[in-house]
Image (cartoon, rainbow, N blue to C red; front, side):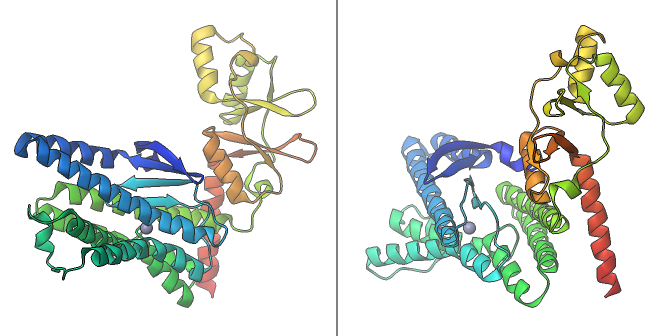
Length: 369
Ligand SMILES: [Zn+2]
């Protein structure tokens, strides 16, 4: 669901938060190291890498600013992903209260502002506010780090989703208009900034800036669809989001029977049930077809199935059920009653259709107002 996250590696865990690095950050490190070593010698390459690692630390502290602010409201942060332009702290949930969102979003840039102030006070003498100094060889590390923190704070305050500034903007809008409308407005503004950034990058011959703009554009889009999903599933349970009419197979049934059922009903994946009506596995279309090709049609289903699908209680919120289904990476999940028996079947298609129909209904009712 979130393809960008597959591009990151875990480097550690701090206070329950997994710290991950995005591939683009690693590529940046490699690029700076290699091009520095080739063009200016090993000493420059090492000092550039030290600078990058310090930037990495500032970004990490920025993210922990968010983490600590979120904890104040009891919201945990399972993971932080670091990108070259900043980090993304994935909080367990984004508070609907705009005041809380404002506080959490602002805590990151505020951390960089505080770091800059601390560095300025360590430095003592008057600081020259001239950005050109950052690339001069004689500029000290402390001065560079002051600039890094200023740039991190300013960049993240740009009102473009998914940057902190975008969230701050959304939170401020939410005081005046409906949160959903505020989200879409903030997303459009964010995408506008991303397009403008991409144009500037092309004219300034800055391929790296172009990639950042491109990433921001798509991240804003996925933010919008996430908000749409949350909005559409609000107030619904796993029972509402799942199918009451579906077919099951048993362990001793043959692959042939399951394939016939698939062709007859167009249901692609089947829950496998035991005699007590409990779901004990999932037979996916992929597994059934593969077995048919490799072992023939007379093989029992028990030799096809590999995994247990997610088990979801009837009354859990639909959004949580959807997350569980997505996390399981399987096409279906079992919705079970209080006795643990399979009551309903949850699939991605089902949820997509529900989201489409709910969104349409909500838009229609908005139009009537
Ligand atoms: Zn931030």
